[in-house]
Every structure is written in C-alpha cells, then in structure tokens.
Length: 133
Ligand code: THU
Image (cartoon, rainbow, N blue to C red):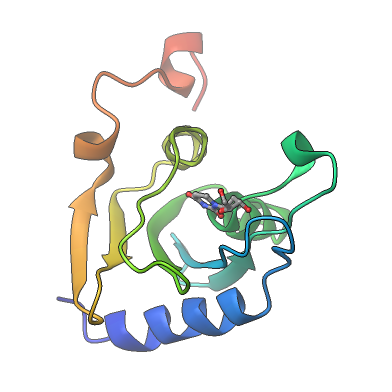
C-alpha cells in the first residue's frame, strides 16, 4: 500500500461530493496520478440525454491529459452512494489508452484494494495495435 493511498482516496471522495448525478443519484469520484506525479480529480457529470453523461474516471483522465499528461500511473475510484462499485468497461478502455497500471478501489467500510489494469481488462486493444505510442 502506497502511503499516499488514503489521502488520494479522500480527495476522490471530495470530488464525488461535487458530482452532478441528478438522474442516478450515484456519485463517483476519481483521482488520477500522472507519470509526472501530478494529481487530477474528476467526478461523474450526468446529462438529461443520458449517453452524454461523463464518468468520474473519464473526467479525471481527460483533465490530466488536457493539463499535459500523456501517461497515467494510477487511478483511485470511490462510489460514495454505493461503496464497492468497479469501473465500467468504457473507463477501463480509457485507462488502457494512457497506460494505467494500478487501479485502487474503495470497498465498503473504507478498505482500499489495488488491482492491475491488465487483470481488469485482459487481452485489451490499445495504441500499440495501431503502431502508436
Ligand atoms: N459511473 C462512473 O462515474 N464511473 C463508473 O465507472 C461507473 C459509473 C457513473 C456514471 C453515471 O453517472 C452513474 O455512475 C450511474 O451509472
């Protein structure tokens, strides 16, 4: 366990408190650690046109990229209304694009557990398949 894990998850939790989730009532927060050590938060932002909604992880990763990051080391995720949720498939694929290695999830009761993205998204399709990166 990284000594920063708890602090980072608490920041993801604060981001979740700012989520815009009037339709699902399901607030998610994420914190991304980019390869340069910078940290970026995100929360889910829903839309009346449901498919236009943005997940917390996607929000945090795209914010990191817009800040200049091109590689992400770790993503912390917490779902404050229903502890124990796991990232959706689309977010796992976005993580794959930017080389995420570790995904840290908060389980009910506050226990943190670290997963490897390769275990969450086996046999994945990525930039290498297109000769990129
Ligand atoms: N959600 C996330 O933010 N991340 C996930 O990985 C799973 C789902 C959001 C999307 C939507 O706003 C709400 O949770 C219910 O699906």
